[in-house]
Length: 394
Image 1 (cartoon, rainbow, N blue to C red):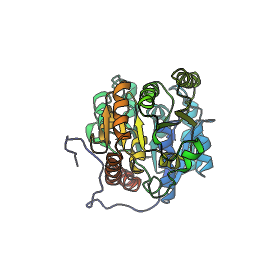
Image 2: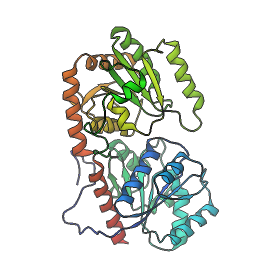
Image 3: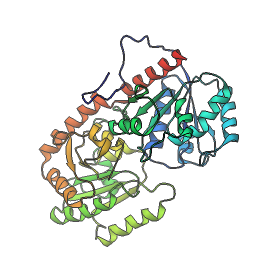
Image 4: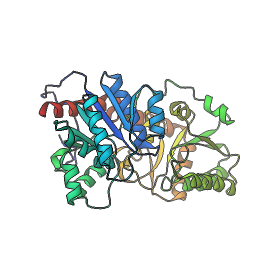
């Protein structure tokens, strides 16, 4: 099946005889960071586990992903994977594949392939391999090393159309092995009907009648936090009843950048209008307190925070970049603004802050769009079909 632009997408085939037996699935994510990629690896592993599959998550020792996975009761194996050449770790991974009698391997991070593919060759078993591609590449990966690693992939799952095209342009994977499968959200957990609109506001000391602009994300260059703060200065000067709630923290190795963001807020005089909440694991409760979500990223391969906010019935003001174009419908579910343009961001926020009817209309449209295109149950159904088809074909 192809979308209107000719890009193959995952779908539930009525003709394909879908298997139903539980699978033993090794999910790998050796990234030491903690952001959208790692969170999706965790959510996906938990969702598959809850469907009855036997999940083993291979990840980096000491990582936030490892700690969160253990807290959620997932089976975790640790491999200190840095760089590319790891013959000893590949051997250990090979023994893990055999010990857990793995049916299929799903890499959540491209760099994992350098360790996973040699391990699969050592097993001498036809264990299928799936790669989720969440970040685009700026270089062509068609050299002998990448031909070796990518030849072993059964299916590449691109999280957006821009990533789909990038995979075909930059890797040796045949186009027929590349599918688009968007990241998804639990629409029961992220629902306007399940959370208290005022709880997080009271926690943050924000009046009930304020209009709240929210941001959720990692403090990292390129996420647009600087533009958000400059927009906040302009908006709050013109609309004193508007407040900003910022939830998130820096990732591994970016602590000094996080401090610079707090310093900038002080320099702009935003002490009374911007509340930094730090990392939160209760994102639905935090988003319940928003009236508007701001998404000022300079470039994004997708944007899970957008579908979470839209599932909560929140209108968005977002940059019109890359994978975001798969999510937001300008003028229907939100307002697009150019990246790196604090003035345009402020104008979009002011427009929504001044119009509660428009906020409600866009919020309702956003919730409907997520239910149609980005519901986790539907996406897990699609992923299971990919798994079962590869396992049967082996």
